[in-house]
Image (cartoon, rainbow, N blue to C red; front, side, top):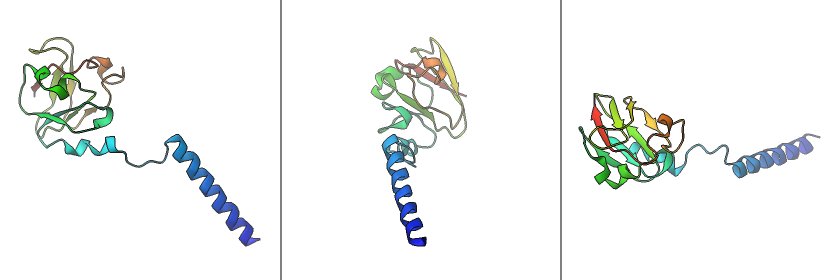
Length: 131
């Protein structure tokens, strides 16, 4: 009887793991999640994939025109890895258009989604000001 129970348990665990893998559940880390740490301390980073996927574009200090940098012009996710300040990011260049105050350590995981700053940055980030 104990042997039958052990076999049933193994079958159940295998079926559950297969179902979770098929649904994409149970994955602890993904390549997209691994990119966030690539953003250097003190930087505002933009990624062309959601959830910090790919290599980051990095800027430091205030920038009137981030559109000259491909990663910011096509930003799909943004991370404030500042060490001292929050940062205000703007949809337009020269600190114009709608803006969002990104707290230190905060991320916009998908700029195309309304839940990420109202989807204001679906066409990229135009400029930024620290503190």
